[in-house]
Amino acid sequence: MFKINGEKLEIERFPDETQRLNIAVDTPHVTIEWLFEKDEEMTLFFVVKHLREKYAVKTIHLYMPYIPHARMDRVNSQRQVFTLKYFCDFINSLCFAKVIVRDAHSHVSLALLNNVASEPIDAIIKHLTDVLLDAKRDIVFYPDEGSSKRYAKLISFPYIFGIKTRDWSTGQILTLDMHGEVPKPPFHVLIVDDISSYGGTFLHSAKKLKELGADKIYLYITHCENAILKGELIHSGLIAKIYTTQSIFTQNHPLIEVIGGTICE
Image (tube, rainbow, N blue to C red; front, side):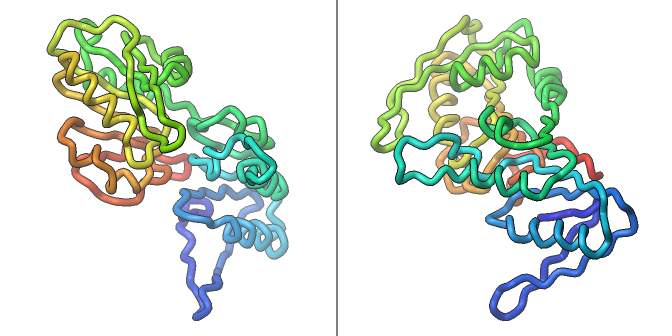
């Protein structure tokens, strides 16, 4: 979905599925908001070219909370296509004055984007710990050491983290070890991470936390893919509530709450 200065862009289509767009602005400064749903790079290209050629827009900011292709942040062979690099090359070619992102999956994304700024999420996580947890008995859980280093410095709250062992041929998690001081049962937990597809990592985490005496388990994911509705986690009964931001989740589910606004509201 796209918004231009807060107004949703309606995308019509010809019978061959090519796009028909109508755009008008009355200001030399424009903010484009892109909430990623699928491969929509050409729409962005059309919008930017139109604004510059027909309205002589001088300054364009891109608000792109989720960075597409961020998972492909490295390649291991000549055959693999470095899609993140080429995507960032495309964004850079549009010469945005600023590109605003939220909780980038990899520092590589931030290094590849020009004029990039990260939208802070510490206030969101702190709010959740304030309303859901008690620092005297409860904990935050980070699924791996990387996420613990990433988020623990944002908020001051007792935490433990996991270390996963995977079968890299299948991607399946074989074991999950917990590191840190586990509180006396029963306790509540907020799991914190940046992105989820089917939720397998969080399913394994919740099972392990339940074994250790966790009562209510909550999950915060900055970017929650719609694919989570097809995974086992959503039906497991292990998670009391899932919180995510408005970035890529476009469905409705009673277990999932979208929190936080956008800069265009």
